[in-house]
Length: 326
Image (cartoon, rainbow, N blue to C red):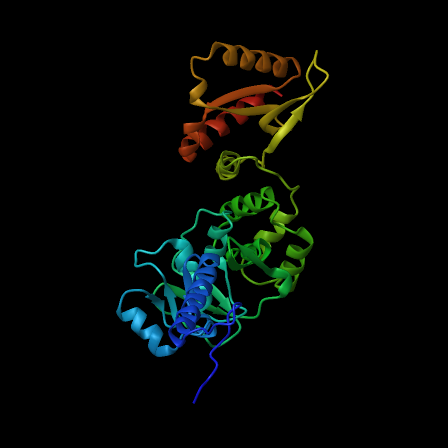
């Protein structure tokens, strides 16, 4: 029986071998495209959709061309896998509609210094279950609260804050809130709705108190670190990047941290400017202008922020001195 396999532009025929080769190349190209979007991680369903059979998948696993991360989820590269590959694999393992949540979502969005693993995933389906490196939280995700971050599905920062509120103390939670707001990830209206829907549950009073404060935007991780230090010192939250009107200048000076009620300013100095006379002269000029405007300026090298107990004790003493002279 003469079967026409296919015609080329010049009227010739494509041999069965060439047709099989073409189909294989097409599948490989599709596999590369999917893997490239997903940190080199793919699910069995995705592999089968591009034309691979289960026995072909098993053969690739046996030959080391695919590496199992979770049941039905594979990486194109052998372990150790990156944290993003573990996150991607966890979301794929839990099926459609699932997303990173809790500390994993916080780490992915870079709003908290929390362990990213094991991967915490929220899923409304029964597909995923707890296993090594994966913790599944059952529950639906409102479409308004779903984000794609670096190619990985995750709940929004608003949901992350609600998730973490029962687990963190108020100082730690404040750091996450300010970090998220500084990145523009918080929608206060939506966060307020989520808190209201859970009013009375563990952690919600802490979030309500923090939301009652004026939002602060931090330009660096260092500024976020000042928040727990101030709490430890018994001080109110500092105003960050605060404009101070001073004599002989049309524009205000913007200081790192300010406590207007105490007339106290803290500036964080980088050690790389040590010995820079031009910078030192400019700093002295700033300090003198602040003094003329009635503010006390105290400078700390940035390394001191790695010693929160020492910083808190010194801030408390400086605040007490400022209060005694008011």
